[in-house]
Length: 117
Image 1 (cartoon, rainbow, N blue to C red):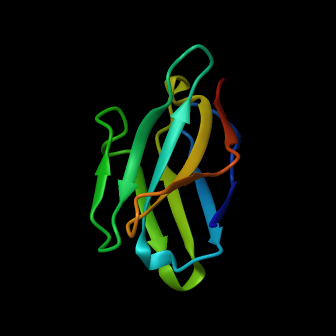
Image 2: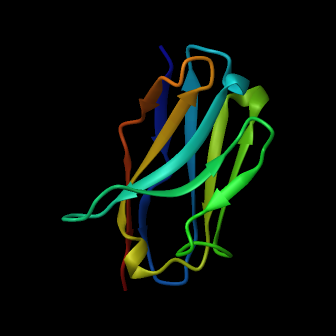
């Protein structure tokens, strides 16, 4: 079973930047599709960005042009670079992995991102 551990969250002012990391262990990283989700209080969890084993990326419309998802296969780590942060970006951000062999999926514990002046 793959284990996912997020880091890099924190408090940032509007317009600032944060870089989230998700370290994966327990399996072959290149066999997984990876994604970042977020959930604000009282709202449903939403997909923010995803990346395939071939590094094809997709983004929610709300973050296009501001967020970048990337991965380092050698380090078994996926990143979310968040720029030009807005208060509406405030949420717990979760790393997610889908094993493409049987479509089983796994979640990290989440990391809090707070954007406030």
